[in-house]
Length: 505
Image (cartoon, rainbow, N blue to C red; front, side, top):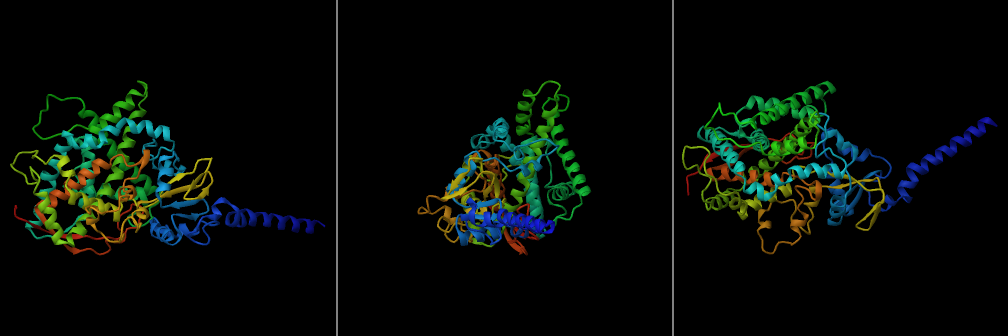
């Protein structure tokens, strides 16, 4: 009798398991009606994990699933990918919170805008610094003009003039990372306290090696040990903390040490630090860690954006000499232009608004961000307990759901020939009116990229300076189109360019 009862009990348990983990999710749950990226997606996460092995985002496979199945696709038992405006509006402006794994992006054990899971905390801290990242502030900031002049004329141009005069090809990825770090750190901490990675190659390499170890293991793999990651994290945090400390000291005027070297205020650091200090008690020094955590987060977000976007701008322009000529003709309409007019520093620059208004330059940058988004992976959120309905599909609470710029930017009804780099699509009078609505390089809603306007200005200023002075041609671009890694950049990429100085027009 006992063996029979045991057998019955085991059979019932097995049937319950089969019902719970196979029959219900496949045929009966609300998600069962959603098309599947893979036939196992409703019951097992292995398809998605396989596509994300070795640091890949899996976004190519997810996009292919959308192409075949439509705007809503189930990619694992509790994950859904969406590629529609209805999804964008509900997920990113509807108060959907972040999944718990975002808490891993804390620095110094302290939350920042990326790692804050609840909307209220995020909104409170974002308001502290949002105005210094607004478009009007960035385009009218004397600090932005000064730091741009110094970085472009005193650091970038001498570097490019050196390789052009010696006919030495230049591998541009590292330089583009350096530009991102120098521009961003100068705005965060002030010029005198910022990095000088354009010229300080040794420190740049040390920092970037630590960043890659911290973020995804040894570069190109996930092979770093826990001890290596901890050491890299400690060194990165110590380095950025030293920048914060320098910015803090610079806020106290030192009349004994006057200098004629151009300098700027630690715009973002000062703004956030003062707000956090006011909200803390006098004995509470937690605001110092909170400020440092936020500053490191901004640095982590920008250097990769600059590396990917500038690299692809240069690659695409280097394949099109005639487009370089057209861009240069447009750039030379600026007054003053990006030619240094004297030996003094800072050199006068065109007004940022004039630069922003150049249609061809804007089209080149925007099309590059469309086709090669620096963050192509899904940006996940959690469906609230009440559930939601997106594009006619009922999705219960607790499901992780998100979309990606990579998928949105490849909608052929909005972007004809979506796999082609066509800046002219942004210039056409007859362009589809919904293009701007589908452009999602910086996200949308309350958690969209806070530094988008600063990034756009810097990308345009760097591109304008380069192509006012030089023509570029490709020497080696092996692997440039393989862009599916955790840090969103080309995997195993190489872009070596030759620079030739052009005469003033």
